[in-house]
Amino acid sequence: MPVEALFTLGIVVSVLFALALSRAAPDTILMAALAVLIISGILTPGEALAGFGNPGVMTIAVLYVVAAGLKETGAIQWLAHRLLGQPQRLRQAQLRVLLPASGLSAFMNNTTVVAMFIPAIQEWAGRLRLPPSKLLLPLSYAAILGGTCTLIGTSTNLVVDGLLQTEMGIGLTMFSLAWIGIPVVLVGGTFLYLFADRLLPNRQGVLEQLEQAREYSVEVVVDEKGPLVGRTIADAGLRHLSFGYLADIERHGRLLTAVPPSTELQAGDILIFIGAPECARELRRIHGLKPASGDVHKLDIAHHQRCLVEAVIGPDFGGLNQTVRESRFRSRYQAVILSISRHGRRLPGKMGDMRLQVGDTLLIETAQDFVDQYRYRKDFLLVSALNDSTPPDFRKAPVAMGILAAMVAASATGLLSILEAALLAGGGMLVTRCVPASKARRYVDLSVLVVIAASFALGAAMTKTGAAAQVAQWLLLIDGLAPWVALALVYLMTVMFTELITNNAAAVLMFPIAVAVAEQLGVSFMPFVIAIMFAASASFMTPLGYQTNLMVLGPGGYRFTDYLRLGAPLSLIVGITAVALVPLAWPF
Image (cartoon, rainbow, N blue to C red; front, side):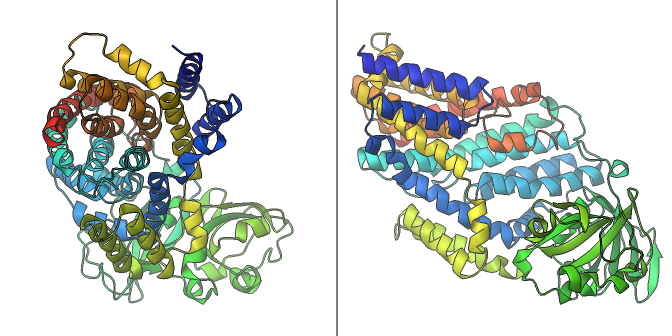
């Protein structure tokens, strides 16, 4: 083996060990490997940095903006509530998780879909008295399976398609993978439906306990033009919130206490919730509710520039020992107090008549720059923004969904390439103000893009030095090895890499090896490349292999063995299905 090939393999092995065992960030590890390849002369700077201009990488970056528009307008949550519904039994709940999650993930970012479904599933778990562990891991797996059906369903597909375009001059269409992806979803989904309940533990999630949290009272009003008018409390999904509970309803000046879940909501009802600060964030994302405080509508701050902030009053606060009304808090700070907590307990009574003291914790709605403006001033001892608390602009949800549908249609019909359609969709989200440019930048995950682009350098080095060809020879040590056996070996090797490192890095590393195996067998490389796409997405056995697996770890109360118990047989079934179908769609 040439020295350059041996050196490249050493770098690849070092990267694999660092990603699997080190606490260093993946983008740092991959960029260090890229630097070594340039400095050692294995790759020229142009070759090493070619990944940053790859069409697949740019498509992923633009799709972050499209996903941001869908999330900021509440379009995904709007869809989720209508598709998930209100099941009455575990079997119904499982079906309502598997079908919508896999369907939506084919066209939307998996992470966004799972993030939006988790609160609804937690509400089910509370109402049906089911352990969330029975539903959340199947949610993650369904989203992963659904992503294999289309080219935009997962970033891995776009990465491999980008490699095909740059290395082979071949591009896949939107539904090229559907011939294999749909059967994989059906087989995997059927397995989850039949065995998830038996194989997953009966375990509660790690949710913050309300009695240990700062407690607030949050008031919202039922919008007369919203979808909640005439629906019961249970049907509206207000019975079991993750961070609070409905205490009272104020209707036409009368206070209704201990209201049953069958109570129908009327326009103008003021709902009084008690709970942790996150309860206010939860309520902001329910279509049909709006803040009851009249001062909120007087804020001279655009809807998409608002957020929820907790602030602890300091000794230099200008309105000490004054009522909220006397302190002129709104005009002084361009913020509205939603609730006050003192010594960890909510203050009852009318907001305007409450007197402010040192140490009071205020839950306020204000501009996004409030934290930076008052973090080091003495008015407040502590200022902290609640993550992801900007209220969605539901009015633009149909616009965002229309842009997504147009993108899918344009690329599916061949009118535009995936990248061109994504660029137009991302621009449409910005032009229609579904998401402002400032917030769209924050949604673009640069660390993921750097990992993917830097991984291309490792793949290029393996091809250039002959290391990929050498690995292919080791895989084909058995004389007369049948192509489908070699395909299974490539699939298995990709799955192993995916469980240890990131799915995108695994796909990029395996691409040159798969092409070299095909060349040495004298068969088409396409079956091997398609197998890599499915294998790199088939991360079911560890919480670290795929981001959605990690997202449900805490809410589901899972342990490592839970992923292995359900994920190992699922991975085997999906692998057998994919390896059997790939040669039928793409013959050797």
